[in-house]
Image 1 (cartoon, rainbow, N blue to C red):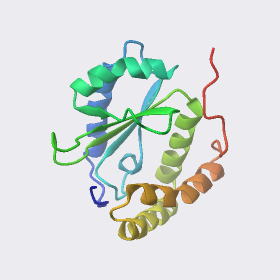
Image 2: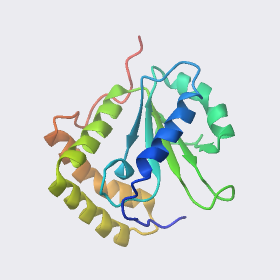
Image 3: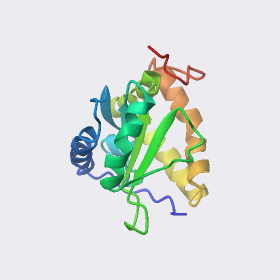
Amino acid sequence: MDAIVLEPYDPAWPQKFEVEKRFVAGCFTRPPGAIEHIGSTSVPGLAAKPIIDITVLVEDLADGLTAVPALEAGGYSYWRDNPDKTRLFLVKGLPPAAPHRTHHLHIHANPVELDRHLAFRDALRADTRLCQAYAALKRDLATRYRHDREAYSDAKTEFVDAVVAAAGGPTRPYPREMPKR
């Protein structure tokens, strides 16, 4: 398991997202509703694991599944056994093909998930003190959970939920499945 290592903000991260966004968009037969840069690499000045997180909103997860072969051909690995059946998750840069993860791709059919990610990202972008508090939390958790990604992520949930709620974003619990049309 790879260690959690935070790096100083890299101003190249937004451009790396833009390049990947064009590739990802071309993998879908039906254009996604949104492709957004999320996570710490999307917040200027915030230290982060150097992994570009991308969220894609599709009308139905079946649309995401049709893109998987093209995404895999472009270097992504699809987590077929993901226990969270509300999204598709792919990783680019897994060994042995690459030395380390470079991208996480989260495909959702629930627009509430997109709203939560954007509310959190935009709140951090707008409030320097909030961003600094999150950075301090991440540094602490990266030390405590250096080799446990799941515990590191889980330990951030309370902070994330509080920020999303304060920003007026959707709070938990919320519908996990997008209603069928």
